[in-house]
Length: 426
Image (cartoon, rainbow, N blue to C red):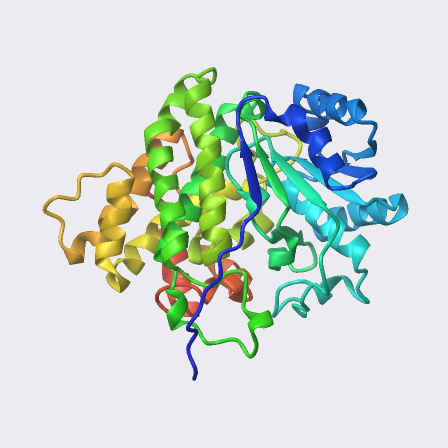
C-alpha cells in the first residue's frame, strides 16, 4: 500500500472583531452577489444579530430572502426543505447565521441548488452515501457563527441526522468551505450557560482529536490529487491551530461561564472555535465524534438545561465530550508524549507523569473541564445503559470518514469497551 506524502492547507478568509457583522453588506457586494439566501433558525432570526445583518444588506441595496426553518440538529428532511427553498429562490449568494446547524444547512442548500444530484445520498460520505466529489465551485457563501463551538465557518463539512438509520453522517468536500467567516464577539452574548458549555467543549474535542489523529503520512495515498480527503490526518500546520485553541479554552471558559458579560473572554472563546475549525478542518476528527453520532441520533427522552423542553436531544458538543475520556485514556499508548502535551496545553501539571500515565492524565483533564462546565456524568446521565451499547457500536461503524483517523484501529470490540468506559466518569 502506497502511503500519503503530502497534505494541503485550506481555510476560509476570516474577519474578526467586535461589530464586524455590520460589514456583511459590503462583503457580499464586493463578491458581486445580487440575490441572497439567509439561512438561520427561529431563535436567531429574532436576535439583534439579524437586525444588524438586514440593515447592512439594505444599506447596499442587496435583495435577500430569509429561511428560518433550520433544525437545531439538522436531518436529511430539514436539509431537503432548505434545499427546496434554495432551488426556488434562484439565489447567487448564500449566508448562514447561527450555530453549526445553520452553517451546515446553508452549505447543503448551496451545493444541492448549484449542482442537483440524481439522488440525495450522492454527495453523502461513504459507506452511507456515494461520496461523489463536488463538480465545481459553489455560489459565494459567508457564515456568521452565533455560537462558539463548531468552527463550521472554516470547514467544508455539513453534518446531519439520517433519520432512516438513526445516525449522524455528513457531506465533506473542500469546495463547501465558506469564502469568509465573520467572527464577531457581539453575536454570542445571548447564549445560555449550557449551550455555551456544550459548544466550547465541542471545540476542545475538535482540537484534541485533530492533535491525536493518525498522522497524514500514515494514511493511504489517494488515487489522484483530486481525491485527497478534506480530513487528511494530523499535520504540522493543523497542530499549530489546534494547540492554540486548547490554550484559549483553558484560559477563558470558566470566565465566560461565571460572567456572560465578559466580552474579552467571550471573544477569545469564539476565536478558539475558529482556530479549532482550521485545525480539524484540515486534519480531521476521530472516535469521540464518530461515537457521538449514534448517541445524538438515538436519543430517548433526555432534555438538557437551556434547550427547548419539547425536543429530547443530546446536543452535539455534549455527545462528543461524553465520549472523549475513555477514548483518550485508550489512545494514550499510541503517542504518550503528544497526549501529555495536550493535557499540558489544557493547564494540567504533567511533571512526573510518564508514558504509561499519558492516557489517564489527558482523560482526567477532560473530565475536570466537564465538571467545571456542569456537563452530565457520562452516557448514563443522558439515558443510555450497557444494554444500548450494541446499537451504539452499530451506529458508529459506518462513520469511516472519522473512525479511520483514530491513531489505533477500533473495531466492534474496541468500540464496545469504549462506550462502556464512558457510561460514568466520576
